Image (cartoon, rainbow, N blue to C red):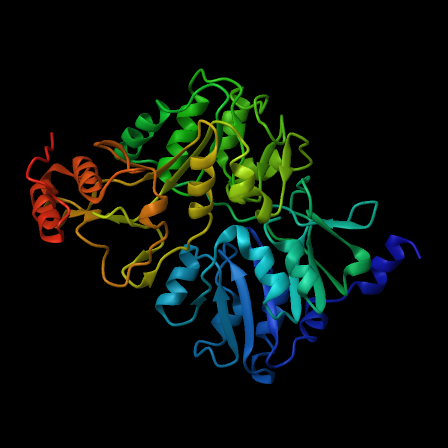
Length: 445
C-alpha cells in the first residue's frame, strides 16, 4: 500500500476522531503554537456524553480550549497544563486549569515512565513523500507523547511550518491511527516590547557577551531586548542553543551575528526545542537547514549545555529574597507561568567553560506610592522557589549585577541589597539584620 492510500484510509472528520475518546481517558492536546483546534471543538460538542476526561496541554496559545468553554464547572473535562500562557493563567484563576510542576528537560521521561495517556491529538505539518508528519514548531516532548499514547490522532494543518531536526521531529503514518485535515493560522505572539528599564538591564548583560558566545534567551521583554541589541551589535560567530526560538533570533541571524561556527556541539546549527513568535519566525524556520529542532531532553539537559563553551543563559524572574532564592513562576501561591527550563539552563550555563547564567528583574514595579520591591526579606507567602539559592549565579537589575556563587549569607545579602531599588535599601538592611545575615561592617554604595 502506498503512503497516499494509507493516508486516505486513515483520513476522518474531526467528529469521527473525537468519537474515540471515552469517559475517564487521559487526552493530550499538544504544546505551544501547535495545539488542537478542530478536534478540540468536536470533543467539546460531546460534553454531555462524557465524564472525567482529563486533558493535558502546554502553554495554550491557540485560544481558550473549546472543552473549557463548554464545561465551565469542569465536570466533564479536567484541563491540566505543564506551563502557563496568559490564557492558562486566567483559567487557573477561575478554577478551570490545573498546573503540572515539571523540570522541563525531564518531561520526556515523565511520559515514558510514569504518565497515563489514552489519546494523543498532535497538530502536525502535512505529510512528506516519505510518509512522515513533522511536529512543526514543537518538538519538545512530542515524540515521547506518541510513544506513550494508546491512540494517535494527527491534526494536519497546512499552515504549519516544517521544522527540520535534530532528532524526534516527526512521526510516521504507520504509527498514526487517525488523520484530520484542518487549516488555521499559526498564533501570532510578538515579544513584549522592552521597557526603558529592560533596556538598561540588557545593556549590562551585553557587556558579558563576547564573540563566539552561545546564547539562550528566556521569555519576556528583557531577553528580547538583549536579542535586538545583539542584532545591532558587531558581535561575531554567536551560537544559539535554547529551548524557545523567538523573533529576535531571526533579526540576529539576518544581521549576520549567528553562525554557530564556535559551538562545541551542533556546529553551525541553531538548536531549539519549540518556537513562539510571529509569522516572521514561522517562515524563517520552515525547511531551514540552518535550524535543528531537538527534543527537550537534549536542548535543556544540563549535561549537554555544559559541553558548549561560553554559554550565556538569560532569564527573567518575579522576585528574589535576601537568601538568594528565586521565584520566577508565581505571585505568592498564584501560578502565573511555570518552572520551564530556567533551572536547567542555570545549572548548565554555570558548568560551561566560560559560561554565565543571568537571572534578571526590574528592581521594583508599580509607580509612586504603589512602588513595590522585587527584592524582599523573604519570598511572598506561598511563592514557588524556581531556582534554589545554591544554584543561582548572577542576579541583575537596572542597578547592577552580582554573582552569588561562593558567597556567605551576609555577603549574599550585601550583594542583593546593592542592586535593589534605592527606595528600599534601608528597609532591606533592617530585614537582613532581623534575619541574622547582616554584619555591622557591611557597606552599601
